[in-house]
Length: 147
Image (cartoon, rainbow, N blue to C red):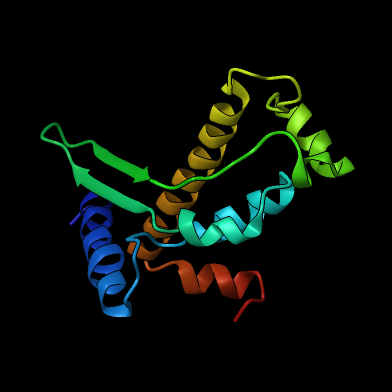
């Protein structure tokens, strides 16, 4: 079985069967980790990680042999102005990411921030599932002294 097929199979085993057995509302590998880190960095309310982590991963090998991998986050609550976004470091990151929403009545900045966070979650999910599929997670943890 090649890596693409292993990733698709592991998506079902870990993200769906494993999440069901654990009583999880979401079916993903680690979305909460990404949300917690990005929410704090961008001045978001960390309490919203609970809702956002009800994400769903989807993986399949297409008819032409490509791997299709997607993450759906039905409740990704973000804001780009007010609250924690006014803290200096968080505001600087929002501005550097071109998503600071001061004066944005259209909500475009919020959509861009949601896309940025979702893309980060997608990359992290695929990375973890691919690492698990290749049986390399324990090697990576050992090399980082995280055993």
